[in-house]
Structures are given as structure tokens and as C-alpha cells.
Image 1 (tube, rainbow over the protein chains, first blue to last red):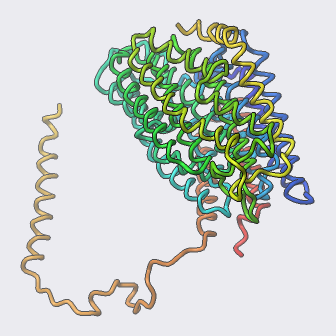
Image 2: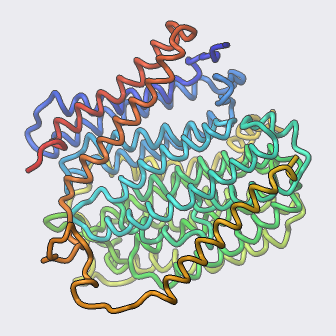
Image 3: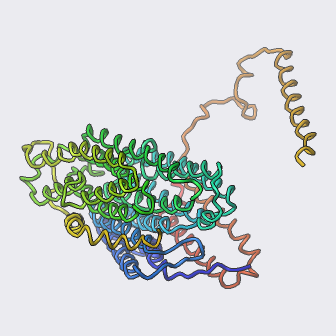
Length: 484
Length: 118
């Protein structure tokens, strides 16, 4: 019997996060806290520190070559960049949650422990090169997110969203697992490398890939597997919504790339069409449904569905579009979590929980808080895709990759959809800058330091990554060059 | 060869057909004289006095969930114990990490009062 080669140092970032998740529980058991705020601040601080350290450990490893651990995970530059996307989303969300979670919960330790476990699950998902590991990491992130979605126990919408997410998510996990089983039946292996080596097509592999795609599209909230997303995104505490709308997509996209690259027997002409059709449906449905939303959070939820559609456009271009998708994911992390952070500032507090903000809550925001309104305007314009903001370059690279791979019509559909999306993004800007303030408008009188920092970082990211688009894109391209 | 198992397939089919035939026969031939007492769900002959669709205390689920969690943990210990001779220190270290995570979780739910009934 040979023991697996456990070379742990490449997994240091994940070990730090999981260790901190356990430490949070121990601290909660050992310490007595004056009130929910004191507990929340300590837990958020510890979590943020561990996220920073993990990001530092990841960044230090970039360019350091590939390392395989026990044959089930592969630490390469692609997965390191995915780590950074996920940690960026986690870090910004923790800053936003800092003052947010104590408003309705005394269970900060569980909240942040679950955030850390979900983050670690996503990071593992992006480096899985073995199907069982892929499934386990998917479940770690899913189960953590189910609980986080329903974390606000005083709010029915939170419980409703969590229940829908959980039931449909469990169902989609079944599809996913069935797909993995068919892969194993056809090739006799769960290692992606061995599957790629033995793959001679075959109908079971085709069906298996179809089932896997259902599971992935569910996590990406692709139409028609998106039913859970608006309710879960609207019901979840706002920092959780921002986190899961960005980080889950990032992990699922990278994992999907690895799986699609491992089935050369199923050509891109076959799965490309499945992805293209879902991409068109996702963009169109997301954008048109967002047009008629009154709740700011629900509008951003549909917008998040639409953005998943844009990113799928890059998927059909295969490995050549990986750096475009990575760039888009970074861009999306900044602008989307930034937008959710501003939305959280517009939520009217009630005794139990902050109330869901309507778009009208932003009426006259520019007069009351010019900086906040400007930040929100930058996020909205970036989400629309207006140059020189980061959202424009994200779309440019993704659609460009689709065009050069011969899917020009798909890029055209994407651009037309961007035009539609301009209506509802710009409506927020119009309401903020032009509409007079009235009794529906609300903004917190004091912006908490954490949320303020998150918004400032997000604005900086949106501007800087837009200005430095080409160097960043080239750098990301080097990370994926080895995969070609 | 698959053909060698044909008699078993025939036996299965015959068994199903026979069972269906007997059940159908009793349904056709048997006398049906329902009354109120017969139609009640039988609970050890007691007269039911509430609807069976009651709401359970959420505590049942907590206890059941904890039970499953730590029961599954014990299942993992068996194959580990059997293979201990070959796993040696590697196995001990792995199991220590596994148990440490679960034990921290156990103390956490204990401290949070998951095992208290009221």
C-alpha cells in the first residue's frame, strides 16, 4: 500500500483559512463579550487578518510553478489567481459585514467561520483535478452558503431564500454526482488527466458532461437553472449576497474549464452550443427581468445573472479565453461587491434586521452624500460597460475572445444585451443625481468604517484595473499560457 | 453467460404475476363491508384522538442531526482501525486532524446549547 504524497506547503492559504474558522469557534467558546458589536468586531478582525495572510501567501507563490498535492489538487498559477479573486471577494464582504452582522445576529463566530469555510471550498474547487475532490469542495461551499443565506433568522425572506437555495441546490448536486458517476463508468478513473488520456468520446461521457453542465449552470445561476438566485440573493444578508454572487461564479467557472479541457472526445462544437444557448438565455432573461425590479438588491441579483451570461460567452472560446474570464472575475468582484456595499448603506434599520432597499431609496443621494453617490455611479457605469472603467474592458476581452473563436453572433447578442442593461443601471444614477429627495429616500447617517473602506477599495479597483487594463490582462495571460 | 440466468428472470416474472393474480383475486372475490371502526388508522387498537400531522419540536432535528454527524464519524474509524498496521503515523496524524475538527465542532454546539432540551 502506497501512502499519498502529502506535500502541504502549496495549500498554505487554504490551511490558514480552515484553521482560522476553527479558531473562531474556540474563541467564541472561551471568551465573554460585552455585546454583539464587540463580538462581531473581534471575529471580523480575525477573519480579515486570515484572508489577508492567505492572499499574501497566494501572491507569493505566483510564478512559482505547478505543484500537485496527493494527485487530487493542482496548485498552478490559474488556481492562484482564482484564490486571489475569491479572497478579494471574501475580504471586501468581511469589511462590509463588520458592522452589518451584529445588527441582527449574536452568532458572529459561526457567520465568519462559514464565510471562511466557503472561501476555502471555492479555492479547493478551482484547483481540483479529481472528480470526488471537485464534488466535496463544491459541497463545502454550497452547504456553507445555504446557511449563510438563511443567517438572518428574524427575516422570513432570508429563510425563504435559504430553503429554495438548499432544496434546488441539493437537487443539482444530484445531477452533478450522476454526471461524475458516468465519467467513471466510461473511463474507469476519477482523475481528470486520466479521463483526458482515455477519452474516446462515447455516449456515456456525453450524457455525463450534460449532467455536469446542469450542476455547474445551477451554481452559476444560468437560465433556466436560475430560479433560486433572485430569492436567495434578495433574502441573504447583503454582504453574503455580494460574496456569493462573485466568488461562487469564479470557482465554478475555473472548475468548469478544467472539466471541459479533460473531455477532448466531446468536441467544442457539441458542448459549445449548449453553453452558447444557456449564455444567450441567461443574458437576455437576466437583463429583461432586471428592467422591472423595484428592489435594488433584486435588480442587482438579476444583473448578476446577466453577468454570468456574459462570462459564459468567453467559455465557448475554450482555454484561449481563460485570461479574459479571469480579468472579468476580478472586475466583477470590485464593481459588484461595491454596488452591494452601497445598497447596504441604503437599507433602513428595523429592530430585527435592515430592511431591503428599494431603488427609490437612492432618491437625491447625491445631495446628501455626494461621495457615496459618486461611488455608486462609478459601479453602475462600470457594470454597464462604459470605458474607461473596468467593466468595459472585461466585456471587451470576453467578447473579443468569443469573436476570435468564431462565435461572433454570440458576442453581438452580448453587446445588444449590454445596451438593454444600460437602462436599469443608469436609472439608479438618474435617481441619485436628478430625483429630488422625498420620504422614500434613506441613507445611513454614519457610514461604518468597514463598509466605507470596502467601497473605497472597490472604487480604486474599478478605476485602477480599468486604467491598467492591458498590463493586468497580459499578466493574467501568462498564468494560463501553460494550459494551452 | 447472460443466457444462463434466464430461468431466474422467468422465476421473477412468474413471482410478480402470481402475486398480482392473488391480490387481484382477493380484491374481486373478497367481501367489502366497511364501517367507521375499520376505516380508522390502527394504532395498537387505541382510538385516535388527534391528527397524526403534529408539529415536532425543532430539538428533535437538532439531536437527530448531531447523532448522524457523530455516527458517521464512527463509521470512518472502522476502516481506519483495520488498516492501522499499514497506515502507521500517517494514519494517526490524519485521524487526529479529522477528530480535532469534529471535536471542536462538538464542543461548540455543546456550548451553544444544542443538547439542552428546553
